[in-house]
Image (cartoon, rainbow, N blue to C red; front, side, top):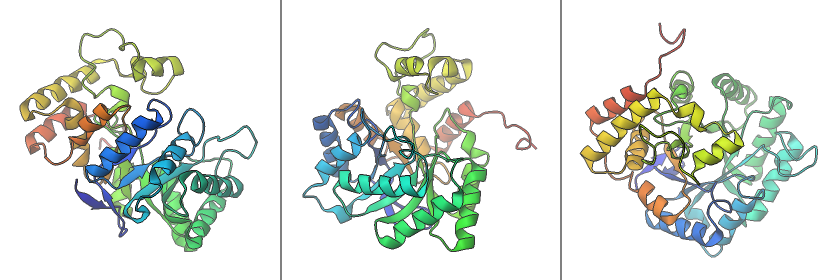
Length: 329
């Protein structure tokens, strides 16, 4: 697996990041540990989790912490996040100084480590002054508890404001962003990706297979998601990848192209979809998540080869969205 720099930092991370969102939820502890071992064996060093992942908050971090015992901590880049509710109290969510400090200490305890390589704010908090959030994060870096800072799910204007405030005050800046990006979800190409390239931020993308839509399991002619699938669950939970949002002609046309390219290059549709992401301008590492060792093996097969420029162009054009004003000028 190739190694890449995270933005303009000197931190080097593997081109595929292992997402631990399934740990303690779809994947039990023994399966999660097997996937961690296999990822490490494949040459990966970059693992992403959050304090709310798992059937209960912190379950994913606890599983990861149990795996870390006795391992070479310095060879790994661990990322986690703070923002969403971890309890019922009025200060158990958000990006206030209190919740960030409570959250980082809880994450360190669950992970069984004395520092976090990449600490990310999971989502914008409109109720907390940005200066309070950024100054608190800066202190965490200077304290040694955190090495680098990142954001997830920020709008371009929010990210730029954070960058400018940190620069003005001399605070440690965000060095990367974690956005939704895949063959079907292309909105970050209009503003966010160019901003990250201009400011030198790394981009670690989530949902490279969009909950299974790009896994090869869905194809033209289907009338409903398969039983037991994530999309079926998305319909029940009203998640953004639900059937009614994506079951349309644009998706079927993109999938037709994805299947055709997969046959040509003798790789699976998920491998092709992730490989396309690996070669997008500005992208550092797609985050691969899996429910089973079999799924992880397939995703790992996205590295170590390249689509042809013609295949990349076909996939890109098949998923292109009409640019709104003023991007269409």
